[in-house]
Length: 398
Image 1 (spheres, rainbow, N blue to C red):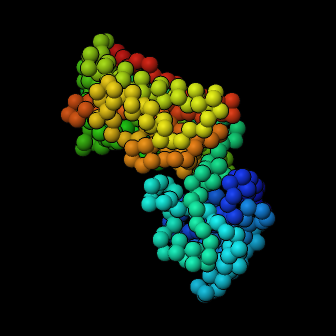
Image 2: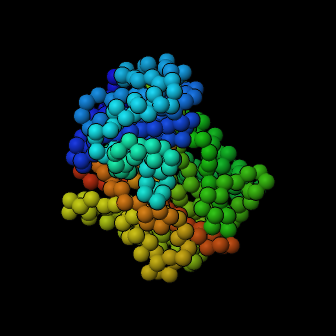
């Protein structure tokens, strides 16, 4: 069996045994369930429905179309081939009919979009076989989203590059302030730095001045970019991972957001909002540290609530318009727990060896926005901040 899949199978079995789940049934058709491929690895040109059965005890089993038979051979997993739909259903029935409960990528009422990947008709099919379908939400993050030391090191290297690059970008603005560099030019500078440093990002960065910074995901183009001048407020959000597209190395993302003022004295309102944002950020991290010391597992929504309450008490709750943070992994927005009690209600637990961002923001339409984003790795010994924590607005010299 492929070593990476063997690791997933072992960890999934441990979790299911501890939680009374009979097995994990992963299903995909034409890429609808990225968690399937996160588990087995990318395989090109699979044209028919495919299933991976991981029982609580015993060896995994694949059920794939005869048409796709050679696509999965390298995995070293025993495979049942089907030609007709009835044969596929018979194979499924033989595997799962007596296990009681089956975990799938299902979220009751669609509460967790990152987990809700199996269509309603397929859920009906599995329930008609006579088993109870439960959500794989905590199972999948335990089995597939926890980092090993090599993955953590790749993240730390990416984080160091981001820390350097965001400051270099602010300095680039200062060095060129006489001609008024545009937001797009700064974004291009960051992309060139990524290329030089061997960092990969499929999109971004966010470079947003003044009112544009009140748009949380503003990405400048040549047509939409404003020039940056003395007295402006600038937000930069950048993310990336070591470029491993031509290798077998499994690298993890880092993701940070910083803000800066072009000049020597930050205006009172920006200073007030900045202090509120980092206060909410630090309140959430303090809660995570406290819960770890008490031996208490936190759910994602609890950290969101802590930061949101801090910001709301200071009068800016209506302007904190997104969740507190997201998980990090092979994707910048990965498949583990999100710090979210706002857009969803994420009841998944923060587990050791999972990484997340903490990134509260306050956005004042037509004026400016502030976000401060740090990355957290939940080590067995407690949570650690893996990126530099901004404590005051960066001053861009002119």
